[in-house]
Length: 119
Image (cartoon, rainbow, N blue to C red; front, side, top):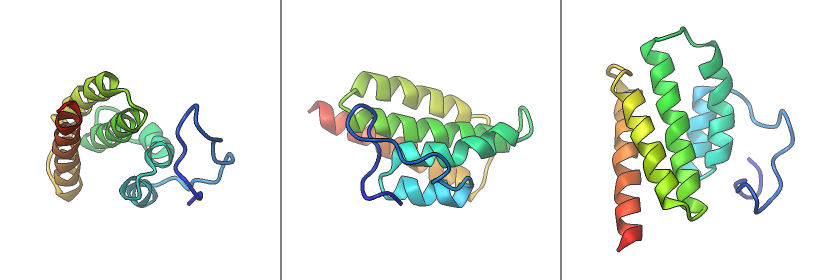
């Protein structure tokens, strides 16, 4: 992991190829608050997932959750809320399972953080 999470417009991007692709890598980055990096880890997996599959929908949801959290950190709550809606649309097609449950919990957590920020 880089010393600090990448925030577009605020610091340099990690070097190309420095983020390993994969669900577990993306999850570790996400949990550490490295939302841009999580997106980068999940995107190559999403690109090769079977079209219209539950797995692809889950990856799309996770990518959007990372993006929504990044927009929140960047002080863009409207963008974060819009992206959260997109993530939930993907989750509706993601089926069931522990990873889907995790993503649904993260969607609720992001919604709560956005509500708390508005207070």
